[in-house]
Image (cartoon, rainbow, N blue to C red):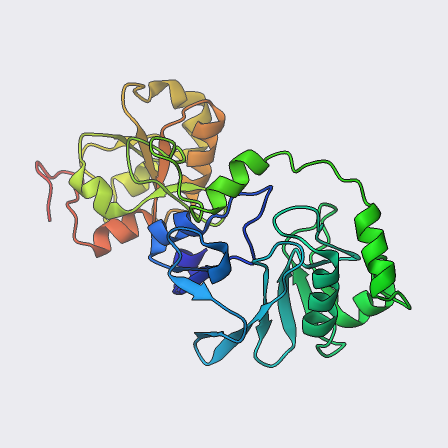
Length: 319
């Protein structure tokens, strides 16, 4: 999505070192060069923004205020937009709940003060985005949590909250032995355990999840993949030309003729713009061909970059 929208990812900000999920910050850094932000008190590796209470993280004309909200863990941070219209509260305050306080230097008294002084002190209209919610709720507000939070809303005071939290008997996080060490590396995979990608090419996925390759890769790796052109026969032989060596199988015939595509090489699918070939790529993946990618931008992008084309009646590629 970052690539499609043409935006720059400045930083990934972690609210804390989570015990059940491994952050994607290092992978995003590796892919985009983005900074990694985390509380300095966590002591994690690969962090380029060592954050403390009172810091500001600027982006464009705006900024996020960094607020320390410990209690769930000692290194919990919340990020508040400069106009106080929204805040990202991590696991300190959840929708109708809050983070547990029984490990990672958690403390119920500390968490109560963090929530009431740093989050519920924001304007009642302020939207609160928790780190996660296991029932799919994505946002709440200061007014809602003041009124309805089962642990500290309504007339509940600090004594009520502390007794509630200290009485809870929760199982240990299932993935803590994997997640905590991983988060202390900012999500960098251990040696030899990097997430698997396509080994045959630098596949990039569209926001819709489609595996794609840029024309530049295909131009420099001619002969390493079967190029399947799913345009019509008229287009294939028409004035737009065709990529040398490409195999013509019009999209309406692709499913029935998939067996004609050689199986000893990966497949790059193309059309005029990359639209029809997107469906062709999906059809081949569904048919069990694992090494398939759409040519991003199709023949139009190939032409725009000046890569070679064949034309009907031509005996050799034309630049």
